[in-house]
Image (cartoon, rainbow, N blue to C red):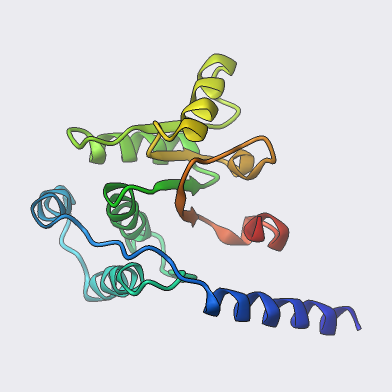
Length: 180
């Protein structure tokens, strides 16, 4: 009975998502090329396909619900960074939840350096003062991309215009966290 209830809820959630519209997000042509060129490795065919699929989703005007799977070293973080770049440059906020918050934050800051985007961290390793400043910036819309732990899904976090949520290592997050 519990499995049927869960399945029914998942079907309803999927149906509601299918009826929703999402903003069309396109990468800025010159900036997109400059950002992609910063990737220090040669993309694999699978990685290029994943990036293309995500870009098509973001351009479709439909809410995206995509799972990217790949072995260690596949380049999933690069797919996430390119999606975050397109979303943030399109004027919406991006939240990246990950267990590797410090590592990913450093990677994001390095890749986004020189672009007009504010990238901030939020985890237990961030001082209370910085965490409060990040929360305030999210609510006011001055923080474009936030990289943090599941703390980003807390009830006291408010976004002015959240447009993309990236969940790294999604198996570590419950269904309730993801739906919120």
